[in-house]
Amino acid sequence: MDQFKNRKVVVIGLDASGRAACEMLQRAGAAVTGVPVPSENPSQKGTPTGDLRGIRIHSNGEALPEADFVVHSSQVSRQHPAVQNLAAKGTPVLSDLELSAQSLFCLSVAISGTNGKTTTAELVASMLEGSQRRTVRAGASGAPVCSIGEMSRELDLVTLDLNAFQLESIENYRPSIAVITNLKGDHLDHYATTADYVRAIGKVFKNQQVFDWAIIQTEALAHLRALGIEIPSKLITFSAKNRRADIFLDHGLLVSTLPNWSGPLFNLEQCALSGPHNAENIMAALAVGRVLRVPLEQMILALKAYQPGPHRLETVATLNGVRFIDNSKAMNVDAVEQSIEALPTGTGGEPNIWLIAGGKDKGLAYHDLGPLLARRVKGAFLIGESREKLRASWSLFTPCTRVDSLLEAVQGAAANAVDGDIVLLSPACSSFDMFESYQHRGRIFRAAVEQLTKAADLSHDRAEKEPCLI
Image (cartoon, rainbow, N blue to C red):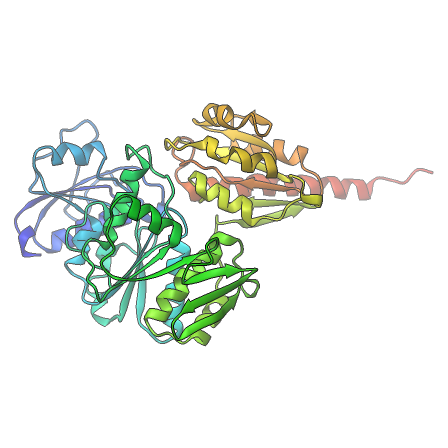
């Protein structure tokens, strides 16, 4: 870290990862200016207006100062105007990941992809802890990577879930094991094309050596190879659709064909996770465990004990036979598709989902969901900036209703739903137009459902108190 002593550094994004970067740089003797930027993840969020332990906070409208380096947080893309402004002047650009890599004292497992990286990282960390391996989960949604440097002296491994923003600005970071859960279009409000987004994630393999490991979904591997991205390390593949993968899904069983580890590994019915996408998350975690020689019995114990976090296909209530599910973390088209496919169909295979979607547009191809909506969705209630774009993309496939608030969407869906139906919040968009974060959006959904529940209870109480007239 000597290269930062007495140097001027600008940190873009003062979420938790940005703050940790500021503190790390300050300890290294740098003069640090922090630039607040809104964040999708409140655990990675912070926009202070005053002094932050001697770090100068950039004011809105103020010209960015000259800098020797610029660091962007895990929630800020290299494409952000403030980063581009300084990069255009020849200022070196680092992500918080690249900055932190200089102070890590143990090996790391890097887990990235469009969807599933948080769940997979949680599974891997749980498996490692169950086998008495010392690890910490950090990255885009865990602890800030810049906060674990000294801690890593006492760890066996660091388990990192990493997004494209962190990986696009690495130079020297090298994971011993790199995992790609899947690759679909996302963040196209930051990247010109899906290929650019995929190339950013593909940088996770940039510095790997032949003795390292890459664990990749087969469909994602095909995408990487089509773009000419080389995988220099040893390879394990997995897939819920491709039986030629090293680990694949067969009627609820996860099956391995790896040498000296062949046969059924795990029955998906034995854990709280469901759906093909979660099957792939489990396959990826099992492959990591295999590479690290964690006994299968210990991995299975971790899988059985695992409980998914909030806002990920979380059932918040069942009212009059209607399930209300919070999937606010589904911020792209693929995540919505995965959530719908993971839910049961109606009687006779009929559509039974009332979808609540919309928010800040990320430039995605929403029409790709059309055929699935036609098969599974009774109707969609659309909110936020993107509601007109979603209506134009989906109205040929399912009835679409534009509403002004999430509360109105919940009430409208509930009024139409019947016994056996599902009201699903799965937005396919960012939350920034109406909410502070996807977590905030999920909490508002829960509050709206609780309001319905209280109204139903009150109505029931009144009915019981009504005198029976014969």
